[in-house]
Length: 361
Ligand SMILES: C[S@@+](CC[C@H](N)C(=O)[O-])C[C@H]1O[C@@H](n2cnc3c(N)ncnc32)[C@H](O)[C@@H]1O
View 1 (cartoon, rainbow, N blue to C red):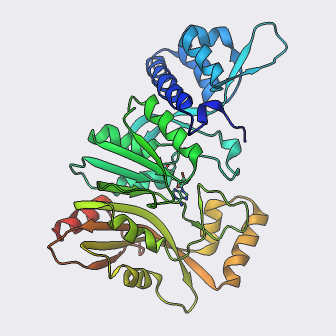
View 2: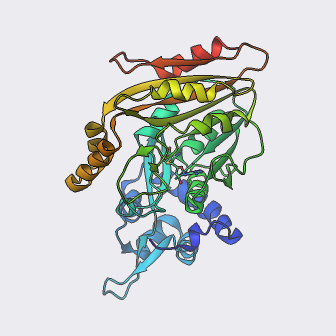
View 3: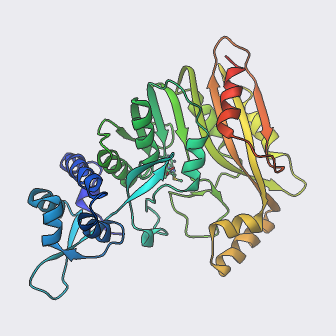
């Protein structure tokens, strides 16, 4: 995957360019939504990665933005055998539905998905995470593992809060800054951190959609794959320490069921018994046979076979998918609760978490 000036995470000039071009481009994209003639070249360049004549882009974006975008490699010259220069986007920028709103999201193009450092746009898991967050007055919000930045940008717009985004992948932090700027949210701060390691402030809301896909036999990416079959047990403890009094942490995770083994949810609950000043809710949304799980994440028959074989060699028959919520409720009774909604009962997770928080205040 190409290194691009616009994505250099530690370069202050690149950071400024992300803010400047992000907000200029965001404004242009916004007004182009009602003008098909302006939208067409922008869509070709940024959603499809196709080259268009530079003159067309100058007409829509203005001379200065195009010059700046070329200098910072957001736009790349392509030789199509004509005298006139043509340009294509180096990163993908699309309007994506995030928490029920359309947001402009910058990410790597889909053809880089299997690159170890590739940063993808928001998916169903991002929507699941957002749908689990109860309404609230969150003044300081942290997203751990912000990826392309869609979730934290949405939360920043929704709550008008101080927002911090962290990720272990510097490329993801650069994308988060670009996405925030595209949506006129330049106040989102970014921080490189291995989960909670470098985070020393306290928050009203901590959210995380960590890499949780289990057991992939090869081709792991930072973005999606996890080797922690216990359901990221340590994150609950780490996030509890980042909460202000009354604060809430919510994260997604998957856990392995081995044939004849312990109940992984019970095991998780035991691990959380000693968290100080907090109650914990473990919410199991589904338990799926490994074949179904693998087919959800891979269409390649050879990878599917190796993946299923890997699970069966370790005696793993099912995968549980769910959500962990940690509520800091100093002074009230602390408990670890479990809820299983894997029997076909449909639940509005946001309501379940809101009601659970209400019983622990
Ligand atoms: C599944 S993506 C979620 C991205 C985004 N939050 C969303 O929902 O669209 C997981 C993110 O966690 C990041 N990540 C992986 N391991 C991490 C770690 N040890 N510490 C912090 N972030 C990590 C990845 O780089 C990736 O951006």
